[in-house]
Image (cartoon, rainbow, N blue to C red; front, top):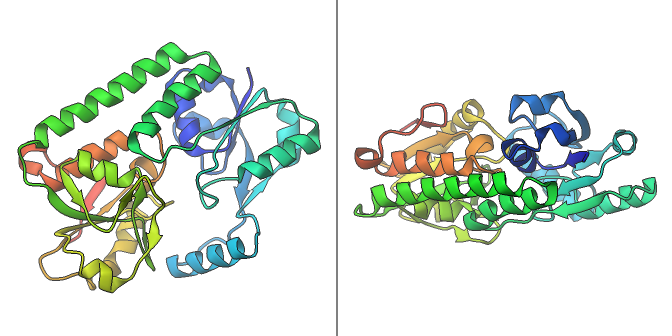
Length: 294
């Protein structure tokens, strides 16, 4: 089998369940595990580099309103890979190549590859998608073992924080303008012993404003801007500190690794959140994933 993955989380899953050797094509964002960087890149971003968050939001909004693509799919590279399976998503046009673009490209190339669309909206669905990908790639047994191990880790976190008062927390998925969390992030907060403010479990994240953020009553604010690692999140979180009520804890996290991408490392994010919310019982968060700013 020859697999093209058009989603960083799918690439992560494929390697984790033993299908990595079959992966022949990836996106420019597929950086985990490091071996994924040795595969041919078949899609790149259409966004200019180096834009600040507000400009990124503006450009994305303008291009989506105009019906323009946010990613370039290299049809030539795709044609040369002779793929049997293409793994993509139909969850968020900002996150990866639109699935309709994938189908159009395959039709144009007269390619008969199967297309597997992964669209998890909740934490449980993310773990279930591991099994779905495993069944599609002949690695179902290993995928089920991984899914079981992830669920066991979540159960262990929940047991540690079960007796604690839920911490009122807000995870910002973007900082300028602020975006309240959606999809699996509110589930992560709940599993870690928190009470999600402003977020909507299983639904899309949404643009809010600073009046809503400061009035939400969150004692802990976690900056997890989609597409950024810990160092970049720390830099983007610095202006947020000036907007929060006195006494509010402010943290920055590695959003790419453990918050934004619906793969196995979301459980690392849950464990980090438990350490942020309840360090006395869960232990401090991994410093490679989370950093306190205030």
